[in-house]
Amino acid sequence: MLTFPDGFLWGAATAAHQIEGNNVNSNWWVHEHTPGTTIVEPSGDAADSYHRFRDDIATLASLGLNSYRFSIEWARIEPERGFVSRAEVDHYRRMVDTCHEFGIEPIVTLMHFTVPRWFERDGFWRAPDAADLFARYTELALPVVSEGVNYVCTINEPNIAAMLAGGEDASNLVAYGLPNPDLQVADALLASHQRSREVLSQLPHVKSGWTVATQAFKALDEEGAGEKLREYGYVRDDWYSEMAAGDDFVGVQAYTRTFIGPEGPRPVADGLETTLTGWEFYPPAAAEGIRSAWELSGHVPVMVTENGIATADDTRRIAYTQGALEHIHDTIAEGIDVLGYQHWSALDNYEWASGFRPTFGLIGWDKQTFERTPKPSARWYGAVAQANGLPDTRA
Ligand code: BGC
Image (tube, rainbow, N blue to C red):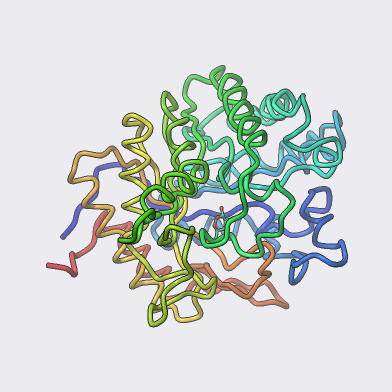
């Protein structure tokens, strides 16, 4: 039996735009309804979790989980520049209260890729006042986290955000073929993160950090591949973990690995199992992300804030998660401070440009009625959480 530390946070993660539905004031809603993009379908009602969050939180609790990572939507809280919706602040506070009601630790993300449409219109992360605006939004959101919220993720995957900000269409957020990051945007995201942390420091109980898409890049055994790995990987991955030094924690979000040759990233080799996103089925990804974030940040506590697979075969989700957790347990045995594991995702959701087809959820739902159905993987994972551990199948 592999037993996890007392108080380990067993949870599942979501992002507002991917499950709430009708996030009409966000920049993504605008893109989804602009002709000629590679976005395959709009988010529409998504899983209607905006209205059904209570059921969703209750379901996670009934499965046996003790935490839920969700994001709050800037475009709802500040739908027009400088115009604040107190009702939406209250809505998200009710989500926190509902978590408490069901014995769930809320882990709140302030920004998970989407921003208000006015923020993009007014210059996006390249606007000179971007960090001021993000700090102001953090102030507006303080009532949501003012009591009973111990973990706040400021910015989700700033490394992916800096790559998507280039305006290039990454139809799939996969390490192979990721666009070049916009380094000006990377700096703006870091400044925004730091300003946001300053605001949050008014609340001494809150621990804050950002969450990095760790990529498990690996150099092939070919001349020049090691050099290429450093050049390609540093600006897409490592820099963001280094910049987490001094934070309260760093989030690790890991799915797969990518091999780097002298010319750059290689597509998944023939014959390897892939998931519905086309990524290699690679359960050690999270453990590798934990080790790299821990080392590069100078030993900041790590939380796995996302890890999972898109599959229509739920037995592969269980196999992937079993493998991931075994490797994560190794990192804890090595002495790394790992705070918890948030499986991606609680629900099948809107997978950005790929639409609803790649199903990452522990819980499925009916397209007409929105009725939720936990999958066998959800029950399996809930039992692991309840036992605070799992058998080692490698033994
Ligand atoms: C993102 C999620 C996304 C997931 C799977 C992460 O990059 O934070 O929003 O759904 O990976 O692609």
